[in-house]
Image 1 (tube, rainbow, N blue to C red):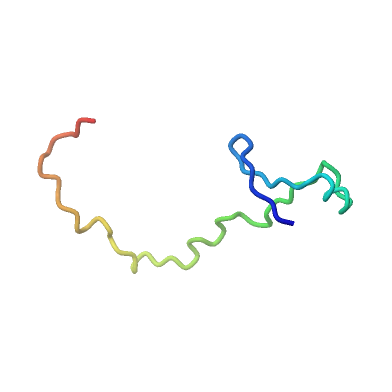
Image 2 (image 1 turned 30 degrees about the vertical axis):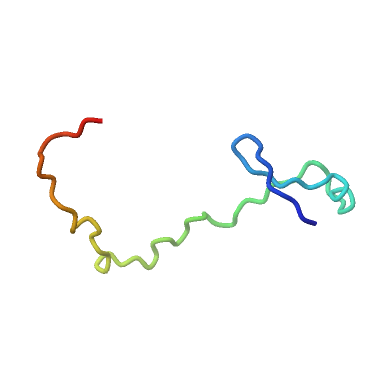
Length: 70
């Protein structure tokens, strides 16, 4: 089966025809499965601060000394 994402409010949803759900024995009400771990678990496990580079070090200094007007 091929389907497209549909916009519903601030979300994108997958539309599944009711006939397909019925054929699979699935009702209109389903339980949402939660992820087994936090999506960001382990992001910094191997981070080494001493190997990090300062990306701001080569920027020119602020010579005007005045606040910007927006």
